[in-house]
Image (cartoon, rainbow over all chains, first blue to last red):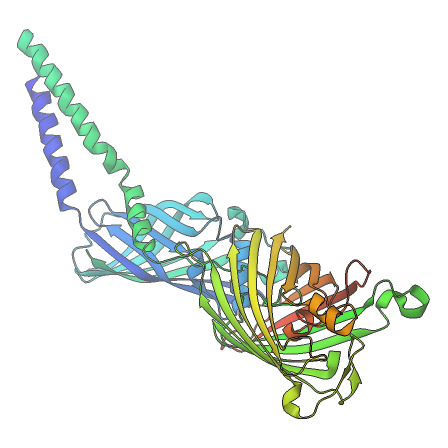
Length: 182
Length: 318
């Protein structure tokens, strides 16, 4: 019985110790862009105000951005994107939260290819996804790079038949951000 | 035995506390998102697309044109729908036309120019978005200033059947200023009020003052993503009784009332409407609308807007 108690106590203290040592890296000016390419049209937009946060202890990662912060070269397109496709008034943000699968010590400088498993929320729909990327650590900051593809249909983003040939079935999403130690 | 139970209770308690500590740990992922949420809520979220276009029907909206974007407006107001089938094909045999261009100097500031076939009038105007609706501020406020020049021959007969004589070019000028205040209540409903001041350098009768105040109301209701109902009403604070007392005739002008629909198709906005005004600039439709709904002076009309982007990389059409 005593051993159970000691074990519990030990676990308890370990827990506290872990919570105290957690290290956070974050940014609020990450770049996330997407790219849609069809023979008829190339559409590109970039969001330079994406927020990201990594907890190097628990290996958790979260990325969130406002849909209205995506900037298109053509403002009319931007309006349609917000009003007709993303319905950004109803669903103002897109986010990812997940965990880095590999056991990596990001506090040590180096280049780490990583895989994050988690859930992606766009247009009010949440789906499990696996995202591959690279983290370059200098110890004080983390340079995060990632790329994945999104199928608008899976997130219930309706593309009217009028423009269906102008918007790709698979949209390339890429991100580039530097997270600094908090 | 007793102490054993005691210990067991303690162990349970410790396990319970541990569980409590462990619980937020499991939620840490949400906490990271919550932290991001807090960070992002520091910046205001601005309301976009209060209206589909920079014009509601005859008048303007709070919307401006984006930087380096050009709007081309083609507007028609046909003849009265009650002008007969054989004689006028329900008004479609004739039309008053206005062609206009608008260019965005910044995302909040545009300049525009146009030419109306009604009284052969050229107009110049500028619009500036002063305040923007956001999650911290309830309305968008845009200021408008405009100028028009009437290039009809002197001594022409106005729509009000009065004769207009110009002694010099200055008399052909008129000016208007307007504050446009709008709120997007939700994604479907947007309402706007438009206090307006107009000045005519020359009016057809001395009993009509050169200065005119007016108050406009307008709004839109989106039926679907691409189909919108719109309405617009301008009340002019004119003095019909004073006019009647001095001239013995009924005041020729009425308030402009218009209803219509907006259809959006990618790069175009089509606005189809019924209105009692054939003028498409403030000086005409606010102060000099001769038609009245009661008399059946209803004109079918349309505005078509085409937007061009001159931003680099923006050459792809939508």
